[in-house]
Image (cartoon, rainbow, N blue to C red; front, side, top):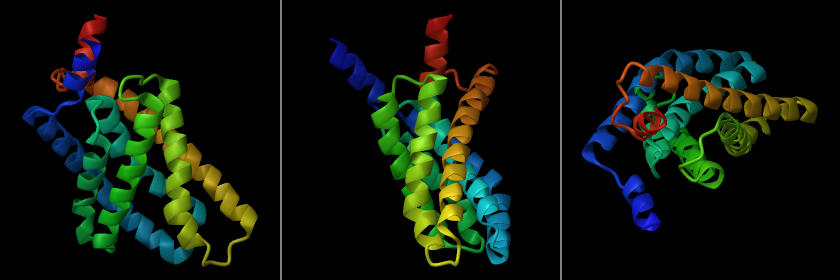
Amino acid sequence: MAKKSIKGKNSWSTRDLLVTIVIGLAFGVLLIPVTWAYAGLLSLGGIFTRTILGGLYFLPAAFAAYVMRKPGATLLASLLSTLPSMFGPYGLIVLMIGALIGLVAELFNWLLTRYRNFSTLHMLWFGVASGITVYLLILGSMLRTTAFEPSILIAALLVSAVMFGLCSVIAKYLANSVAKTGVLANTALGETNADEI
């Protein structure tokens, strides 16, 4: 009986799909200036500022993970959030970064929350683990080709972990604030809040 209940929670409805699409695209519009700022700072070589801005791309994945609580939501929201920025300075590279962030977030969402346990501590670790992994896969590989000292690269790794963790917790509190308006009533978060009342 319990297995059937979990399977039902993991299945997708048309409404779930539409809400996830809206989450991804809404964050995508907000990330357009971040993409341009990142491009500008890349030419200046500001490693810590770029790492901080890079963490903001985790917000859509963390928000969707917390609100939807379904396999695939983090990946879909992360991919869709990069679509508006594809018309900026990076083109398809942004889409690939969104896919990688979404895949990493999906993995750690499953490992650390099992799509059920979204305490602040679990959200924090979800973000930290994602931030370390994304840094090593994307930023670490790009920054290895530069003249930065190893101590600077390690410090940037810590900044990435902190930034992703912070964005994950911010996404949770932002989603809770939005949920109070009733907009998310028909999502997993809305149903959880209704059950707690």
